[in-house]
Length: 492
Image (cartoon, rainbow, N blue to C red; front, side, top):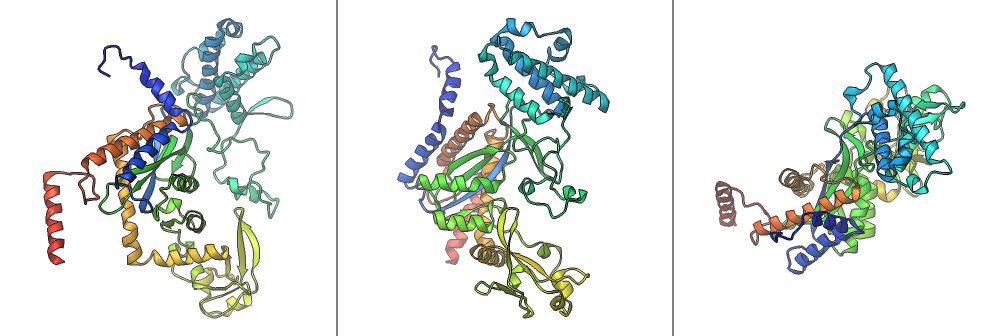
């Protein structure tokens, strides 16, 4: 790079090559493979995973800014491709509206005026679509990337009524749940929609998983963690080794859309690690990755002991009482026995959020006569206890983990997972992982992989043989470590 003939533009070309296929992942795989051969990475050892949010390299837009800026970006690209064709469409109003970036402070303030502005932009977009679909329009203009983004945004933000008039879509319904969209309703009353089951014909903005929020990075998505963060961008999942006496090496990196849940990324992480012969014997993760189903799948398909907290029953968090794990199932007779000895009728198969469940309902008369009714059912109107059971292997896992995670040995074992928070902090604060340097998921993933590789190099340089702690720390910190190690040696 010190050569006078070196041109820095080749760095962008290198980045583009790294973004092709899975070259970035293969680069990290080669590094980890060499470390495994050198004995610094243990196969079938212990690993831990955590995720963090990553901000896209774009400005966050509201919906009216979005449609205006999307149309402006499409006109910019069309002008670069065929300025003469675009010049026929441009009017004085278009020049004023789209001649410079669309900013919130330049838009109308009143609600009605803002809605009218959005419809005006929508009509301008429809005029552009009609011109693009004309017979004499070059086909290459219709295939431009920003034109395709414009089409998707218009589908998501506008709709045509029965009179073919353009309409502005309503906002999302906060209680709308995608898992229930195709579930049959119990009632056709208006109250059903309020419970998260809207009419599919309702003209509203789509879910965050598919909604484009910026024309300059169409793959970035909006997400939020209640009470923690709201952002537009992606998620980065980092998996590192955490074996005693060895350096903590990042062995896998996954980049996902921001709204994607952690649990949805786990299977791909396990599959990638198993394909490379690096599947751990024990995998420590937080509660966002763990359900009985993921524990069972990791154990049966990959031979991985997935360690993480399973969500407690709602009654465990709200008030003391009988939880599902206090009941004894008879899988042959398909019945459930309560702590006081009452046995339910045979359960019935059902679905909950599209998943197989068993519905167990105790008779009202049995529960009314029980002295522990209020502690068990939690209601005062005399209803019987209703319990949803998972399939047998999953239910047994759920009961076992819920019991284990209340014990001290399990907590001491799980405490090692907290070290992954330090890795997130290091890559974010020391190496700038929080902010995307590029646009698009593929190039963002390259940044994440190269950041992980650079972090590994720094850790290997700092590693002291026999010590799994990769940070040298201050002089006083090292002195304290030596004192603790000497004390532990003397007590042995």
